Image (cartoon, rainbow, N blue to C red; front, side, top):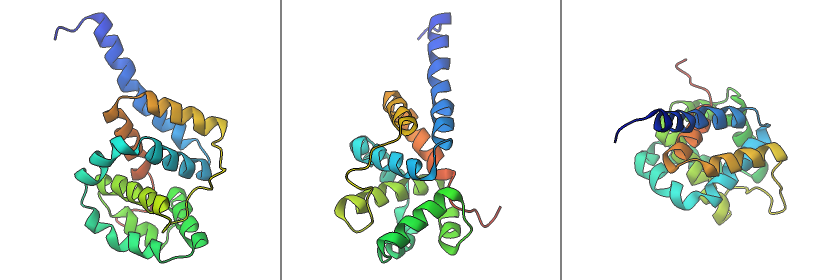
Amino acid sequence: MAYSATTASIFNLQTADVPSVTAQYQRLSTDDKLALLWFAYTEMGRTITPAAPGAARLQFAEGLLNEIKQMSGDEQLKVMRDLINKVNTPLTRAYGILTNNTKLAFWYQLAEFMTEGSVIPVPSNYKLSKEANTVLVALQKLEFNQQITVLRNAAVDMGVDPLA
């Protein structure tokens, strides 16, 4: 394909969308981030499914996921908030050592557990804030690989890296 000024500017615009949507996501409140991940994985989950678990070694996160499943709903919510807020706990450090793709798959699996009822879901009557809805709409407009990149960026920016 020959590149012209038009195709180059379109390409730059598309690649600029990932950092923009990632930055918009980072500005959301903790609960809006959780809700947006839930809506992204449930509404777009059919396309995320092959990318997340297929690219990761989820067995490295199974212990952490099983530990979360055994907690009360309030404890589960606290762990998810602690991950987003980078609170230094044994669980957030365990998450912090996972690979980037495993972190992405971890959140996919949490959404699956929420759907089946073994992890506390977002309340059925929950409405995304205006800001979170704007991010969700922007995310949905991105190409598939860009969507995965934004979600991976969100997942990677959670937890505590004990080696850092």
